[in-house]
Length: 353
Image 1 (spheres, rainbow, N blue to C red):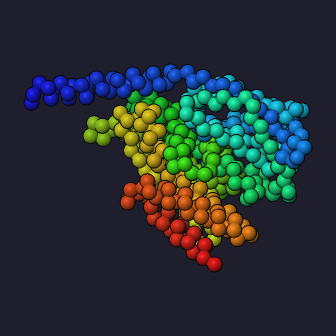
Image 2: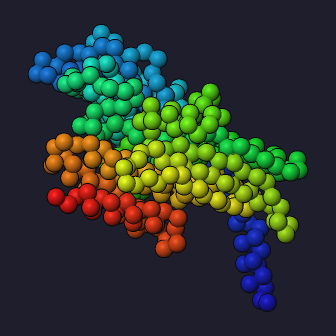
Image 3: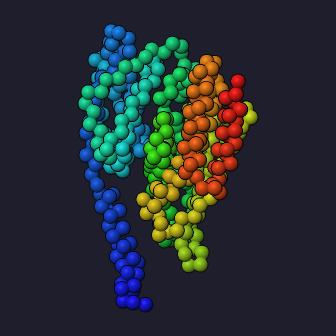
């Protein structure tokens, strides 16, 4: 072997991993300078009166924070993002702000930025429309309001390890999984440019260990797309350290003739691939794809409830477009391929007069 080839191998196995670790360390130390977000909420009528008492939720990287104070008498609000979110949450290119008030249709504002984490908004004007009829269930909105956040809930992984080192690595994995689960899903949806907004929230502690019936009841009450659960175990196989993950993605929306049930996903992550960037990329491919499928199922479900044929057809077309966007990214043997084709067939039959 030539000295040049030997040097290249040494660089690849010695210098390159070191540089990757240094880059990751620098990235985790980045201090994202988040500017305040401020504005006013008005009524949508011609007079445009200030609207007080509007509750505000802000979503970054799948993390939701509620402002302690609703809008004031003049309809004004202000949020210092750096006080509400961690640097990791701020490291994103899209911001969602959700405005809610009893008697009014919810309104979701979103802003994309070319500079991650920089959302300088000091004069946002939001106009909220009075609801024509009272809403039925807590957490649900009128089907006519298409900008509402779709929600996904996830539980902390149950982790198991053998030796002390394995236990330590699993603790690291447990710390990273919730954050990178959210980041993976949001990043995947951004890349597909789908016309929907998704929030990924942790399950409340009191329902994390509940049985399937209780979990499903909670998810339906919150009008959720899905619930993610799973466990991970530390393994050593042929001297190679691995983390084996067994996960389930339970899709909540159901159709009379199409019940996707629970998607089970098994995956193995080598210990040397548990870096944040690698982990986020793996989770994006797994859960991002499942999320797109759940969104299409949700849109189909809502379409079948429409009484206006034009709106029904428009929602079915949207569901079809979402499925096509996801299917283009899937390999032939992907677990979701058949599910997507079956749902696409259901939509095609539903669109026929």
